[in-house]
Length: 447
Image (cartoon, rainbow, N blue to C red; front, side):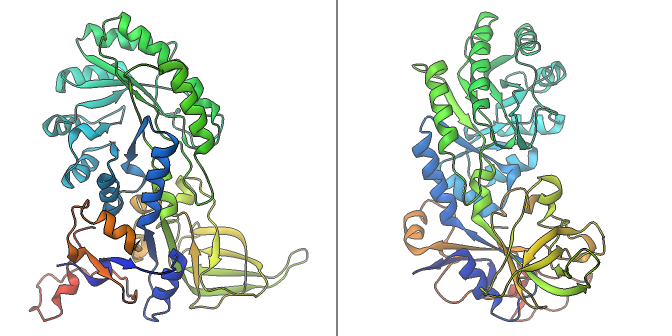
């Protein structure tokens, strides 16, 4: 049975994620933070990707946001998936994704995860060291290997080369030879310029390196070089675009892989996830600090989500979050700071901000909150994780509903969005007799 609050709401007319959040908050019983997930944003970004980079197949990076509805939607659209663990492979295959649409893109894999991938038929996987080659030789000698090289963007939100990727000039040639000696098959090259990269020319450099390694690999016995994985790094905010980077990538592919049958894939994460999720958080307390000699009065606002929850992205993903009052106001902004609900002094969402005066019971909205937030959040100090309220436009729903592995019971057409969002309480050791309302404690199949 599916809980009413966790169904996907089918909406008509003019609406936005903010207007949906206002409707939920206006219910009056809502106290916990919640997300509004706009399925249409995901679909629009998929079509934009295919239009701007028709040769590059998107393989969604599951680690960015493993919300099952997001993953299911992308699977229905036809994307592949970049999985980094057994659990991510389990998630993706559980919704019917074929193993050929998965790349096990973790260059340092646990043995049990390699064995699981072998059982599930996920044969394509990355490596960047001799140790990994020895492990794969022992556990999965039939694997189709992709060597991951390092080519870092000049600036990135989260650099990855410090952890993964062999040097394309000094290390990669030797590893290709070692793989050949071990009788392992290398079929391609991958790289990742860094998550949230701000340099576009880096893709040209990385594709140049890849072309050279394709030629070298063939000369040492890897005769089936057929896959280029250009990784991630693509922007995902509402006001960002991949048009500029698409021009660079398309040109580089034409120059170095034009006329070839090489399959090109990428691993976008935040591109699909970030803008689709809007977070609403309640101001539950405030504290006025008096003016000091050289400073204005300052207000501390305490909200019901923080850096141990959704705003872990501030610490770990280096995001610059922006707060705005959920309800429009014409009052003048004043100096303030925004704090999370826990008793930890480090739980600060925004150390400096400028917001109109708020009261306890007002709501703040945060856009672009779908990337590297939900998967990392924890209920530290006993504060619940936000729940996701998914919405979709009726016309889009009619065109997609037969593609999803979902039934009519997963959707509600029209009617008001209401709370509360609190997750079901943990059952007591001795369950009480069921009542006619027991169904509300059943988790939705999507979560």
